[in-house]
Length: 82
Image 1 (spheres, rainbow, N blue to C red):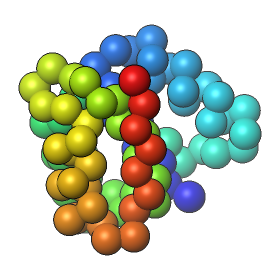
Image 2 (cartoon, helix red, strand yellow):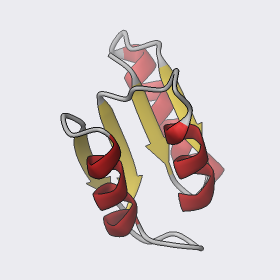
Image 3 (tube, rainbow, N blue to C red):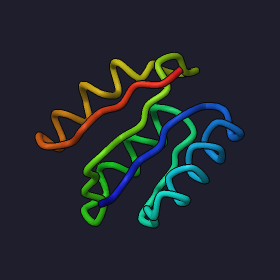
């Protein structure tokens, strides 16, 4: 399972990444905000199954990003966090 974590706080990303790794997930990509996340998501090799999105981020919120990711990957599961 390929996982995307998007937040504008490095500590939040590292904490969630560590928890997911403890559960056995290893294919985890992180991005620091909406622009970087969209850039990463549009790369052909990145087909994410799940995205953990911060609701409130500088440069665009997770709700808007979630809608764009759903457009890119119709089967993606979106988990909002704050």
